[in-house]
Image (tube, rainbow, N blue to C red):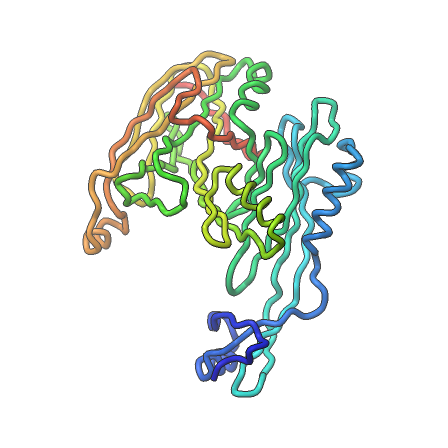
Length: 357
């Protein structure tokens, strides 16, 4: 039996529902969720608050007085991210053939505001938006831009800064007793978000890195983010599409798809170091050796190419690896073309300092 025309139709969701709800869904194939009460966070309120800060040209203290303690803060004090959380309570209606209400877990709503400051600690740019997380169904990611800074809310929250700004600001502030290595993957795919490690036209982005004899650590060198552009006016939709393209994404129907490469800074002791990069989905590695001096910034470009695609039967006995690849690591003192345009991850969770051999 079809749902009533006035009821928005969503796919039936069985996982996690009580046995009765699952039975009703299987019998009818028709379910819709209905919001209960007011949402805990409204997107327009988040946007209006950011607009007020922009008009007031607020100081850092005034921003914090308005938005609270920051969720993330750039170690250099140049940008901060704020979050406000709420929940939209919901219930499900099953038609058997009459509506039968069943409780649903609420949808988590999170409003984010990214603020960039000038050297005097005064607001220079601000951006804001709403992300949602549903227990059943879609989760809405978010990308914000403010000045030279970018905030990505996806599987993990990341604060990024343009490569040019990072080099300009960090060159004179890097710890004189250390050297910094900016690690990144070569970018050879188009940015539709459809590439995969098994696609021979794409380079392999190695995501685990071992420095010298230390344990390998996972590096966030590649993120695939997709978020809805929203159902809004033509003018607002155009703004959302422009923002999507400004961060390097592609507009795909009603969503923005972003396959984003980023650089991760590693702080090392001066001397000789060996890097070994691997990736769980493929056999093979990329390795290289370099030396650095105190206060120096070195770029490490990870390159890799698929050499073999495993059959399904081969994947099973090769621990679900999808293929094999070969690669190398190139080191440069100047920004290499292969890493051009990639932002630097300045999320305040820096890897542990690694001594030289």
